[in-house]
Image (cartoon, rainbow, N blue to C red; front, side, top):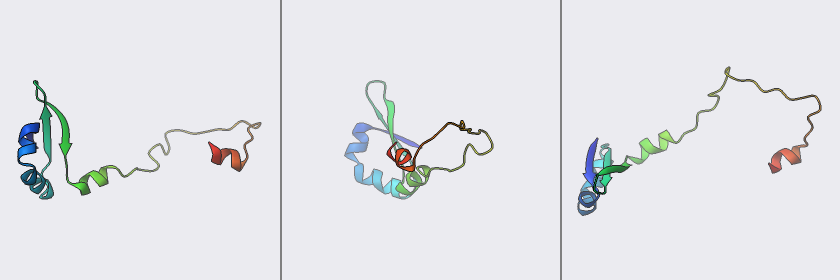
Length: 79
């Protein structure tokens, strides 16, 4: 991963975007200590990382409801 200061990223933004389009991840550093504050990644990679996995707790937990538990469908939907 390539790291650029904010000033470098601003002055060469077009070339930064070209690199990102080609698949390179670019970290942006900021401040006196030049801490990394952001990472520019290709959109497709970001989009894939946002996909939620269903069933991650399957087999790891259970849920039980007491016999006196009552809730109508309307109450459940309004939560």
